[in-house]
Amino acid sequence: MLGKCLKYDFKETFKLWWVGALVSLLSALPLSLLIFSIMNDIGDQSSFRWQVFPLMICYIGVVVGMMISLFSVYVRYYRHFFGKEAYLTFTLPVKRTTLFTSKYITALFFNIASYAILIFGMAGFMGYAILDTAGSGFSGSAERESLVTMVIVALIVIVVYALFFLYTISLSTLSYFFIITFCGVYFKKYSLLAIIVAFFCLSFFGSYAMMLPMMGGMLGIFGLVGLIDANIVSMGPLQGFALIGAGLLLVIVAVTALNMLLAFLSKELLERKLNVT
Amino acid sequence: MKKNLRSYLALFLSLFLLLCLPTLSFAEDEEATAEWRIDESGDLLYYGQERYLPFDLSYDYLNLWDFSKEATVLLNDRELSVAICDDNPDLVLLYEDSKDYADGGCKHLYYKESALAEAKALLEGEFTSYKLNDEFYISKVENALIEGILSRYEEQKQTVEVLELENADQYELLGYFKKGLPLKKLGVLLDSDKGYYYVSYQGLTNDRFTSDGKLSTREGQVSALLLTEEESAAISDALYDYTFTKPQVSADPPTALLYVFFFIGVALFGIFSPLLILVFAVIMLVRKKTLHPARYVALGLLSIAWIVLALLVALLILI
Image (cartoon, rainbow over all chains, first blue to last red; front, side, top):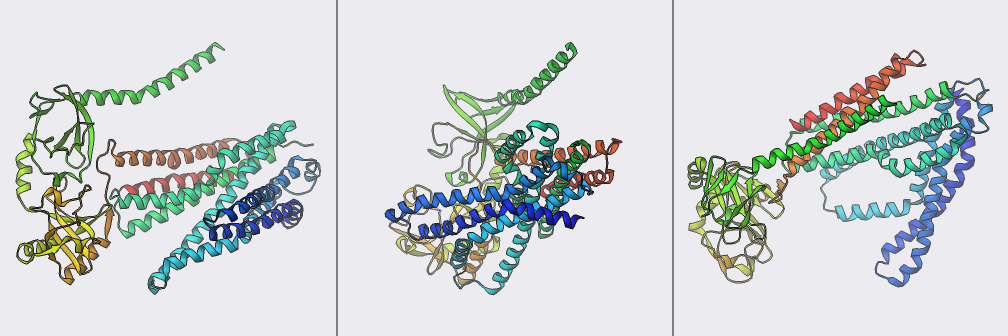
């Protein structure tokens, strides 16, 4: 049954998502070229003037496109459980947990796809920036051994950050799901208004909290290096590895617990409190 | 309603009293620092019954110490600050806020009378370790290497035009007596095209230095010892293994502040947050209405793992 739910959810979410994705892709491509061009013409005032206006338009396009594509999954969630469609939803012989899980997987997929589209749009500029940095950093004199070590470290960093990125997206998705469910259950008639206010508050104050796992990991590593450098903390390699391992495990356990908490709360509210009949 | 009002009042008063707590600790500090006093001649500094005598040291010794301000004392209507050395509580600095404390030598440095003889004996003794100091970095060097350079200096030094050393990086050589006791600036190592030169500060007059305390390379000659290739290689290796230097005079020691933030972080994100989740999971488990109790068992176990891991991380950092 989950397969059927997923198929239906993917189809419905895509109807709104593609508009946002297209807007963000079409804005990101020229934005990438404009940034590239400005970086090459630094100091040239005459060309800078005509580049700034389109740059701002493209930037706004990217932001609006991303917002549409990211929020399409929440629109789908709201419509399915609390909109007009809800009357039909709960007549289906499907567990609410299955419906919720299907929404969660769909949301994760489309949120990652939104970021992937943005990265694809900006790929030219990002690739140039990476090659430029790498070119100035190595300049042919780097020893092979250190290069191999750097590649291995870079791969580990990429894997760890990909994991944190996934966790962050999952946490933000479940937070929004919880807000929609909470407002939908307790505010009934004014649920949409409450959701908009809560979304605004969460985006305003909570976006930093959403980034905590990533920021925390980064700050933790830099802070620890700082402590070691300042001779406040001294540790051997074994203790260092144990600390990094325990730190990573801590972040994984903490974010998993938060994810579970939000998911269980939303499911509990959906199953116990929702009375649409 | 009346009962509610009383509860609110009690809560408000408790919070108010809680907020007052930090001021109590400050009050205690004031009482403690009020015991610092100085006699009219300025030769004797007292902390309670303990006497502090002037400690005659040259400017070379002072530059790399960290002092924390403790109190203020009045001397002939001038307000002077008393600061204690972070590494050695027996060493006290007296200075005027409006003037540079090092202005006109270090006549304002005091040492605890009961420990003064031991400190002076150590100053006359030999150095126990050596370090090289850049503006931002500090590196430990082997004693044998430096002692070899110092022993050869007087015999093998040559006269060098300072202009030749114009673009050379400078690393000050510091001699340490013992952890927490004074260090001395012995000289400077200059990284020139020919290799490292060592120039001793002994006998150099004040006009041979720039305003930021570096050896001036504008004009004149200095006696310098050119290091051998092995010595230069060992110095390069030592410089590669550096740590950052700490800020010199600080009102609040940054270490203490770091620890405060660290413990607040551990308490808030490592204990309080998972404890809330654990309490929630237990409540859900106890409730008979809960639909899927196994989920909350898993959540409770995860929050316990969270607390354990947070404490483990804190422990690994602290040991």
